[in-house]
Structure formats: C-alpha cells, structure tokens
Length: 469
Figure (tube, rainbow, N blue to C red):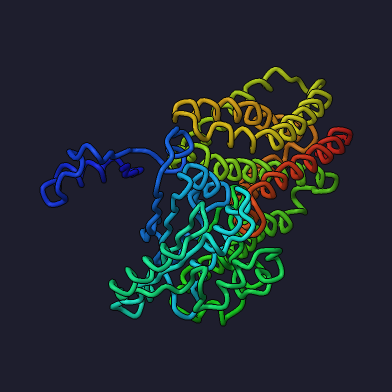
C-alpha cells in the first residue's frame, strides 16, 4: 500500500511526532509512504494497482473567499484520470470523494463527467456499467459546511451483480446511501450524464459548468461561466457560493485594474498633451502596451501549464520565473550593441524571430509536457528550463529595442512608455487568469502571441516615422 503526500513535513509529523497515535504505519512492511506529487508518481510507476483513492485532495486555506477555484489542479483532469485508469488492474477501482451539496451537487456531477470522458478514452462504450456513487449526508454540523461527501467509484471492468449487492449492503450498514449504480439512479442527472453519446447540449444547459476539465483547462473548482458572472441567483444560492463568488471577484478586479490604468496613466498623459506632443507617437504607445500584455500572458500561461508537468505549484512558480527572468535579462543584454542606425532593421528581424519561436513553442509544448510527466523531478525541471529559455531570450529583446527607437523618435515620451508598459503588465496578470479560466491556457498563450504580432506591426510603423520632439 502506497500513501502519497506532497508535503514531506506532513509525513514527518504523522510518522514521527504523532507516530504513537497513528500506529507507526511507516513500520508496516505492507505500507510505503511516498513524498511526491500523486499524478507524477503514478505516471512514472511501472506497477498496477487494485485501488487508487483520491479523498478530498484540495485545501481550504484559500477557500474563505473561494480563491482555490483560480488554482490549477492536475488531479482532476481527463488526462490524469486516463493515466490513473491505465495504472489499475483489470478489476481495479478508482475512488474519488468530493463534497456533496444536497441542492446542487455540482462537484460530484463534474467528477461523473470526468469519469465518463476518461472511460471513453480507454475504450469503454457504456460508462454506466462501470460507475457507482455513494454519499454520506451525516457530516454537516454547521450551516456553512457542505451537506455531505459523495464518493465516486470507477471500475475498469463492468460492476457485477455480486459487487453491487455487496456495495449496497455495506452502504446500508454504514448508514450511507447509494445514489447511483448500474441498477438505479436516485438523481436523474447522474443517469443522463452516464447514458453515453454527446453530452454537449446537456452540459451547456446546466446552470454551472460541469464539463470535464482537461490539462489545458485544469480548473476543476471553477464552475461559473463568464456569461453568468452577474447572475445573482448563482452568487447567492446554496452553500458552495464561495466558488462562484471568487470568479465574480476576479471579474471585478479586472474592471478595477482597467479603470485604474486609465486614471493613472492614460488620463494624465492626455491632460499633459499640450506640454508633450503626442502626434505620431501612437505606434510606440501600441508597441509598449502590446509587449507588456504579451509578456505576462505568455509567462502566466506557461506557469499554469508547467505546474502540471512539474507536479508542484512551487516548482511551477520558481522554475518559470527563474527561466524567463534569467533568459529575458540575457536577451535584453544582447541588444546593447544595436546602434541607432541599425536598431530599426535589426529590431524587426528579432521580433519576427520571436514570433516564429513562440509559434514553435506553442505547438511543441503540450506534447513535451505530456512526455516528461513520468520523468524524475530533476529532469522535468531541466526540460522546462530548456524549453522556456529561447522564448524568454527573444521576449527580453523587445523592450530595449523599443526604447532605443523611442529615444530616437520621441525622447520626451519615454517615461510614459515605461509607465504604459508596466500598467499593461499589471492588467495582463489579471487578464491572463480570466482568459485561462474562461477558455483555456492555450488561448491565453496565443493571445500573448497575438500581442507580439501587434507589437511587430506597430514597431515597423514607428521605425519608419521621423522624430516627433
């Protein structure tokens, strides 16, 4: 038996400080404790398991405001569950427990959709025969707590009549309830979700988003669609409103940042136009806004994507920041030899190369992330740095190239270009999360590529214009 824990301090506490209380399971030769991220460990393991259990694996540390819905979770995606099912024995079971809200059990609906999609990927034609859901509704003792816990059982092989009978008998003994099995369904929604066929119309008609998350959109806890962000009935009904309120808060934050950018940058610039001529500076303004938006869209989207490959949010943050900041600094340094006479032509060439590098990166990264998933942590970190370094190197050249042209064409406006670039970066840090949550991580990345394409066009126009002192 393997117990996987991502935090080694938890293992040390359980087996050390509280070892006498827990019975020192670490001394049992049948039990093995593993300090690793679960998905990476299972993907790299040659063994097959009789049971893989995922019991409420998340944290409420940030959930007071529902902030956890903005975090990626690599355990609750179709690709992850396909990996888990492939590592089960022929009659093995994947057991997943999530909070069960009596009025709207959306988390359990979503795990059901996940199971159906994952079973389809391993060739199962009739998912209903492979699923059972048991709920315990006796845990809530406060109004703000979930009503209960629902456990989804996913079997590689169809559940047999004796297995279903044993499950029902055990549920009755524990005073649990079997709400779904191949025999019956206490909730018509479970029956519709497991009926097979195209679920698109059913999922789209549901009040919240219960479609199966993927590695490209691994936000299991985000169930609020962008079009519903102002729906008060979703924001105020039920106990699980913290999830939808967090997304509404994010939308409000985006509006606030946009307004503050206008008030602190655009408005003062407009009010001082009589002292600082703006005519002809439009392409440079667009350039610096575009590269500010583009850099953060690409940085944050890759941070979100590589968290899945690296297996730990801390690694995702530190590796991506280290690789991009180091490489972009190197790229900026490599522009120091460009003179005023050569910067226009050389700048266009380097921006074109940047777009080509980003295009190759965008196409190649998803298969690379999938390929390195079972590799040791050190290899995953090294590969991530190697993949990120070229794009960081080229993106780091854009700002100094733009400033060289700006200093030649409109030196009086260079402080405003700095300000606009910084404001665009702040705005983009929120915008990137909004795009990834609403559409996908890939969409956020390609939006960043589009920003750099706009920057190239604006740079080409600005480099041909005369000085506007």
